[in-house]
Every structure is written in C-alpha cells, then in structure tokens.
Image (cartoon, rainbow, N blue to C red):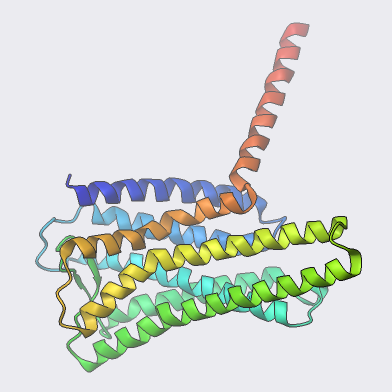
Length: 305
C-alpha cells in the first residue's frame, strides 16, 4: 500500500471510530440539550462521508485512466455529506445571529423543531448539489492525481463553468462570510450583555461570572468549528479555483495535500465536541462510576455468601 492510501486509511479509521463513538454519546444526551440534534447530524454526515466515500477509495487503481462507477459513487458520497455539513454550519451561524439579534423569549421558540428543520434542509441542500453532476450539469471524473474521482474542475461547456462558479459561491464564499459575520455579531452581543451584567450586578457577582464563563465557552467552541472549516476546505477550494479558471498546472503533491485537508474535516468535529463540554470524558467517567459501583455491589454480595 502506497503512502497516499496509507494516510487515507489512517484518516478513515480514526474518522469512523470517533464519529461512531460521538454519535452514541450525542444520542444519549439529546433529550437534555436540543442543540445536540445538530451535532448528531454533523457526526452522521462525517460518518457517511468516511464509510461510503473514503473506504471505496482504498480499492482504486493507483493509475486510473477512466472514472469507474465505484469511483463516481465514492466522489458523490464525499461531496454529498461535505455540502450538507457546510450548509448546516452556515444555517447554524445565521440562526444564531437571528436569535441573538431578536427579542425572542425562550418559550416562544420550539428549538427542537427549529434544529430538526435545519438538519433536514441541510441534507436536502447537500443532496441537490451532489446529484447535479450525475444529471449532466457537471461530472465526477478522475483527478489529475489518477488516484481518486471528484467534481470536474476542468470545465469545457458553459453549463459546467456556471455550475462551478455557483458552487464556489454557495459552497465556500457565502458560508465563510455568513459564519464570520455570525462570529463577529455574537462577540459584540456577548460583550454588550457582559457589560450590562457588570454595571447592574458588578463584576464579582456570581451570576455575572457564570454568564461570562458560559458564553465565552460557547463562542470559543463555535470559533473552533469555523477555523476547522476554513483550514480543511480553503486549500481544496483554492486548488479548485486555480484548476478551473487558470492555465496553471497544479503539482500532484499539492492536489494530494489539498484533498487530505478536506478529508480531515470528517474527524475534527468529535474532538471539538470533547473540547466544548467534555462530553466523552463525562460519559466515560459516568460509565466507569457505574461499573465500579456494580463491581462493589457484586463483591459485597459474594462476601455475604
């Protein structure tokens, strides 16, 4: 197995394991926190991408000359969850900005229904963008690396060029703008509310400190999700733009690097969840506590016998 497939195998294995574990713990927590519904959708998207998109790529011929059916399906199942994740992050950013900027009472909003609708809309959005190349608006073809398939970044017809332009706009630039705008707006709202708490109750007030800690943690977790998106997808989008709209010849090693950065997006979210609220740590400690308690009980029962 060459270095490219070995690296892909490592990324795929970690992504499948971490997202499976993440889904398990997130599902157990969803009744307590409606926001977890979106996290479940993100993990499900990453898991689908890893299993249906990355695993088939391990069996491709290292020097493909023509896109096979398996290669096209692999490209579809990489594109579909990727567009879904991008749409979901954008929707989360926009909804967060709207909710913070509008005087809603928590009793007026059914957050569970809101997050379910965002999830469903994101999956539909991702599917539409991913299925269009299969319908002739573009195509899934062999990359210049000859080791995998992706959307055709060397358009020949006006329809293919239009698809790429719109895809770059709605799949990268608009999401980046909306996410960054949401982050800046959130930072301003948090700062304003914190100043109000300080003036009203004082900096040393328990509620002021608790609010500051909670909001800071929420904002920083969102920032990390944004940075992970930018770091993972900017190289691929940049290479795609240069390949599609310039005559520059992109080196193969750069194509591999950009592709692997994109694939890393499938395994970073579970670690973000862990950082965000210690989800895995809490669940593991809870399981450990229950196991220890059970062992002590059995030991006591045996000693009584």
